[in-house]
Structure formats: structure tokens, C-alpha cells
Length: 434
Ligand code: AMX
Image (cartoon, rainbow, N blue to C red):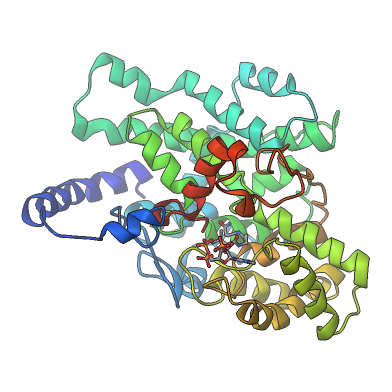
């Protein structure tokens, strides 16, 4: 059985050679034009990426494998059916499907590295409960760079061709510690004073995450989280958060700092926060018109949202032009479980999907009237008991002069100098909200 590092050792020399050849043999190839740049790099091919490819109509493929293919071939956790996050990580990094033994070994490696340094626990515990969890997560991750292997090696002096080994060490340490960090923040904010279990060395990363959050007994939620997190493993590398981490990493800032930066891009309501926006929106819809509603009532609610100048959260995409296959995979997960089929919020998500594309087409603005993954993901978490959310990122994305105005409408008005830049990065091609 190979370790991930040994598997990568086989792949990386060939990749380095491939890149060298690309640079020498195709250095003059044209990839875009000025028009792309005027639109905030909209549509401009501006980066090289191979771990996953996002076809506008077919959706994501991970090293050539569609989501159903990944679900078939990627190892699950013992007692589970859904692919694990580790299996997806292995595939993304090596281009090869791991064996069950390899995936398990990676789970164990991550579990063994999963504890937080004491000072990071203290730092996180010192944050006010009112500080947004994403701000806390970003700061916690950045603080983990205290132990960066890359930084230490760089200071000693290393060859460029060896950067990857130290970067990998940091990346795995970071991934290993994310469950304990995120769960600690979750408990501090929403369940203060509740004791957190120790990391179980026999569990996979997400099995542990679920237990640390306090949902270890809920096998169905744990399986959902495995699927959900594996599906989010990559999205062509160019979405706003991934692009941010690449940009920051290109300065040789270590993986902790690069990932922290990515989290701050992810925190925006048009990107990672969108699943919370969807939940809030669906709950507001439920409160206003009920759960047992007709298509006509949903249609009216959609128009009300659009006419008030807001986007319909969970719909539209920077690249996709069809329903997101990640949305479909999560919906299929819901369809396979009777308890989810009976959930009023999941029922509303389903009905909204039957109506929203038609309304958005009639509205005529968005290039993609179909749902993205966030149209359902947060609502499923809500059903399982992860009900808490923060109302808004305090003012960051609201116009200072007209607090109620959604930010897309405000671009260009004076208080938006800084915020306008955020809008461009979300809407630009390489900074798309995927
Ligand atoms: N509802 C209403 N209007 C929408 C819309 C929606 N769901 N999606 C796009 N539009 C509007 C845009 O705001 C834009 O209007 P403008 O010309 O007045 O600025 C116009 O349609 C054209 O936009 P686009 O080219 O189709 O989309 P984009 O590439 O600029 O933005 C995205 C993509 C995802 C930010 C946008 O579709 C959106 O805001 N969707 C709702 C938020 C959401 O679901 N985000 C999650 C995306 C997935 C993720 O990153 N997690």
C-alpha cells in the first residue's frame, strides 16, 4: 500500500516535464481577447488546470470521471456508501482512483494529525460569539501557519522542484485539522460549553467531523456530509475562492495563508454563503406562503424577489448553463431517504426547482436559469439539525448608503470602491462564483 506522498512521487516528475514542454512548445498560443478583460475576465481562459473540468452543459468531471462514476468507483467509509473526502482528495491529487486500503490509510494519517495546537484553541476560544464563523475560521487557519513546514524549509533554502513535498505536508496537516477547528468554532458560537469528543483514529475525516460537531450518531447526516464535501473537492480550480488561494499561493505564501484567503472569498453571499442565503430565502417563503403551496404561489414569490432587485439565491452560475449535477446528486440523496422526502423545506426546494427556471428565463437576465449546488445543500443540513445561521456578514456586502440594497445593484456608487473590487472578483471569469 502506497502513501499519498509515494503515489505523488510517481506522478510529479512527468507533470513537471509536461509543464516545461507546454511552456516551450506553445508559448505564443493565444487564449483570449480584450473583450474578456473588460468584463472582469469573464470568459477569459486564464489558468491551466487539470484536476477537474467544468463543461457548461454537462457539469463537473474529476479527472475525467462524472459524479455518478465517482460515486461508483471511489471508496466509501466502513459501513457507508458515499465516497469519502479522502478518496476524492486522492483522485484529485494523483489522477488515480485509490484502493480502499490507500483511502483508509489516508484517513488514519489525517486522524493522527487532527488535533489543534493549544494556542489555536485558545485563540479561537477568545473570539466573541458574535464574530461571524467564517471570519473565525479564516483567522484560525491563518494561525496554523505557525507550524508551516513549507515556510521552515524555504527559510533553510530548498530547490523549486522540491516545494511540493513541503506544501503537501502543510496541506495535509491543514486538511487534518479543519474538522477540529470548524467544530470548535461551531460549538463556541452555537453550543457554548458543550464538550467535544476526541478524534477517533479509526474514523474517516468526515466521520470525525460529524462526531466533533455533535452529530456522530446520525449516520444519514454523516453520509450526506461525505457526499457534500467530496463533491466540493474541486470545481475547475477557477472559482472565486480557489482562484484566490492560487493567487496568494503564487507569492509562495504558505498553504495556510493561501487557504485562509480562499475562505474569505468563499464567505460572500454570491459564493459559499449562497447556501445559507437559499435556506433563509426558502424559510422566508415557507413563513409567508406555507409549505403546501401551488406552483403559482411559488411563481409569485419568485417574481417578488426579482422585482425587489435581489437575485434568486441558488440559481445561476458563472460557467454552467444547465442544472448543476452536484445539485442533482444531492437531490438524489434526498430522494433515496424517506425522512428527507417528508421534510417541508426539501419539498419547497423541489417545487421551486420546478418553477424557477421558467421564471428566470422570462426575467431574461441570468445566462443560466438553473439551480447550482447551493439550491439544496443548506436546506438538507437544516433538516438534519444544523439549523443555525448568521443573518448577514455585517455590512460587508451591503451598500453603506442604502443598507437594504443588494450589492450587485450598487456597483459603481461611491461607497463601493472597496466592495466593487469584490464584485469584480466574484463576477470575473477566473474569479467566478462557482
Ligand atoms: N437571480 C436573479 N438575477 C440573476 C441571477 C439570479 N439567480 N443570476 C444572475 N442574475 C443576473 C446577474 O445579477 C446579472 O445582472 P446584472 O447584469 O444586472 O449585473 C445578470 O443576471 C447576468 O449574470 P450572469 O452572467 O448570468 O451571472 P454571473 O456570471 O455574473 O454571476 C452568479 C453568477 C452565481 C454570481 C449569479 O448567477 C448569482 O448571483 N446567483 C445567485 C447567487 C448564488 O446562487 N450563488 C452561488 C453560486 C455557486 C457558488 O459559488 N457556491
